[in-house]
Image (spheres, rainbow, N blue to C red):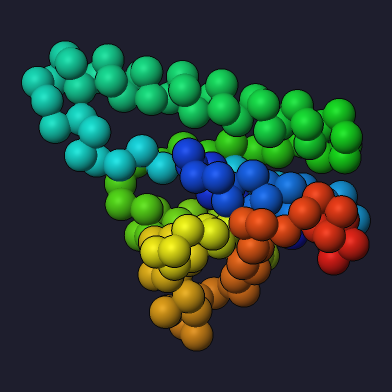
Length: 151
């Protein structure tokens, strides 16, 4: 089964990327894999404190994931898979694509701020010619109705 890989983070544009991935999966018989990355600098504390912070980060990710997963299951009958990795975002995204041969498309949301589309879109689009899968970049301001029309 082809999976749409989408990155779960705290950005506003993440929502449209999630919607797009779920709608495409529903319409094409694919799956959704949601990747959340815990940055390494979050745990540069004493060992005990770092472990507690790591567990708290995982709990936040699971709670955030469940909001999207419930919507996908209830509205689109898509049961997403959660993957949590630790490290720098771009290398971890590329590693996930390499590690799971069923990932067929990377879906990213583009930010609407004046600073550009966001760091992931900027970094990954620069190397898009050598990526093993295509990237779909979903505009952050695309309406739900327009998303439904294009998926």
